[in-house]
Length: 401
Image 1 (tube, helix red, strand yellow):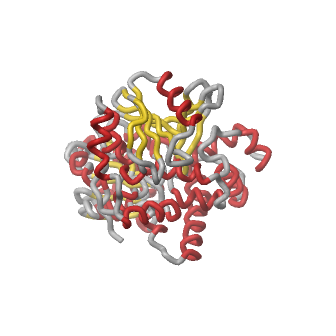
Image 2 (cartoon, one colour):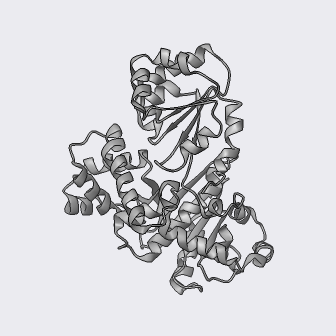
Image 3 (cartoon, one colour):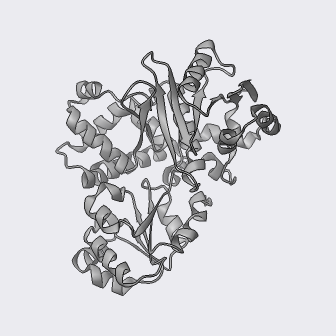
């Protein structure tokens, strides 16, 4: 089940430049496998002996174990170690000394953030994408669309890939059910796979989450909160609805949602276009289905599937900053998500049918009126590659991979 991860191509340059490199991401996303591939020595603070030494004698921990690069897995479990790392790299001024991995965002913990500022390069390892699962190179099609000045030529140049292989179609279908976490997606027994997802969520929600936010909620209350939230995926978060369904107040709900992002369960996107607020997508497709109990509209799962795969093209490409957001006007015209990259905008509009409806065309026009230097990509599994207008393209999802 081994797959080469796109992030592996970015790590050598970071190790050649920075004394500390961080690899962060969801539990079971593949951090350990990736880190071990570049490690001189590997230690995990999930191991009690390692953790106790790091907590009680952090300087001795580094002296005993230091080989370059030294991988310290789940290092957030010993916060005192970070001040020692800060002092160590101040004295030993050379790159590539430490690789720190964690299933909690370091920036969510003040002590860690302050110790490592200016001393670490962070990378996030995302769940596997369809392209990675199929051993394909990192896609470039979205970037080429954004940069294109001639949509007719762009459509013509990509139309030859209109008919995907059967294996790719199956991979796309499987992904929408199995997600992209290596620790669960390769489990073919459905009952065992669901059990693994449940156990994994309990570890994150009942242990990792409490490292970020202090809460008296029991695990059963936290999972109820997560299930209530899951039923809102892809829509502006309603704290009133959460309160009615779970009894968790607005202030507490906001803290827990922020913590859920810090432990890589969800990804928040700001709302633009005239409305305020945030939406979210789950980090992993399978966890979205598990927590929502498969009760969401299929279009929500499909939008999340596209988002989870499309972001990799930008997350693993460092030359320009990027951001995703949700487009929603005061008149309820919406695009599930849009992208700003290199001062250009791309709206993404999953379709209900292979041919856009009048309302979907109007939604794309609304987006184009609000953003200069923008395009819209309409997408459907069975769409025929075509140009709808000078700034709108229709394409099948298979071309994304």
